[in-house]
Length: 357
Ligand code: KG4
Ligand code: ZN
Image 1 (cartoon, rainbow, N blue to C red):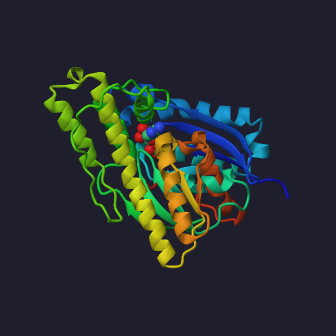
Image 2: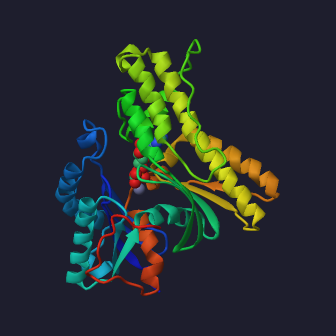
Image 3: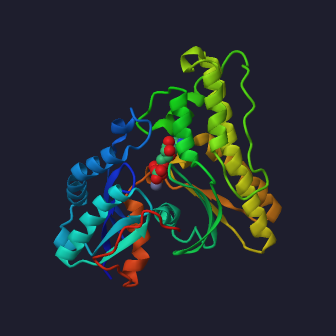
């Protein structure tokens, strides 16, 4: 049988994305139009600006995805996939309207995809066939989510831990902004990581004790960490009064504490699975924050420890960084099992800004 070829569209946050992928794991095109420079001044995503940019960019993202894949939408595209949610309603509506209208007009099947399932399932497609087996653990760490999930099949996920306040990604963003770091092309979180990794400092500096909330509980919390840094900067009378070594020590203490929480919950989850006889062979880590190298090193330590405890290997899997940030490839792949099963959505399918996984 011929490959099933999907045109996928994603616009849940601030990137306008379109891609063409196939059922045999090919990426024929992957267009991501970023708009971070539009939001830099605001220090987060400003919805009216994001919606406006999606409206401007979406037609060109779709056109480019088709031409870079060298496909004809009428002849070569078998189905259209789109992110239904969760996300900002106005942003989601740009992508869903485009996808629904194209699908209805061209009489192609339509599948609405859960954005986080896209992140969670990506590794199945990027790893060698058969290496990722259900059940597996997934850590979804991005600007929108801080989730530890147990994936039992393509559409069943159990939430083991989530954040009770801010997401880890937003916290990286806010702390990066508090420390007045210049955004890199990959955003404020990446800027913070790079700043931490720059040359070692001569003398150790005094920084405030950093909160370690919810030890032993299957829950994350990041707002306390953020306010630790905020208070310190405030007491100093502003970031301009803090020297570079102190600033770097603060950034490092923050990054270490933020990652420590992930390590702790991952170990708790692995131990609990082991006690219940659920045999986990993979820990898949995805979402924008997964590109952080310090975090990767720490989680590697966790799986080494737990592999020894359970006496069988657990492998740590990271989809390639360009597929860890928002993209439409993951949406196309996450739609595939539904297209292949003939399980389509109605052309009138509604967006789901708040959609539990
Ligand atoms: O998955 P993603 O691109 O978008 C959604 O939130 O859906 O994740 C973006 C988040 C941002 O908060 C960004 O600052 C963070 O991922 N991020 C990082 C790094 N690269 C991106 N956080 C920490 N270290 C990084 N290297
Ligand atoms: Zn995302």
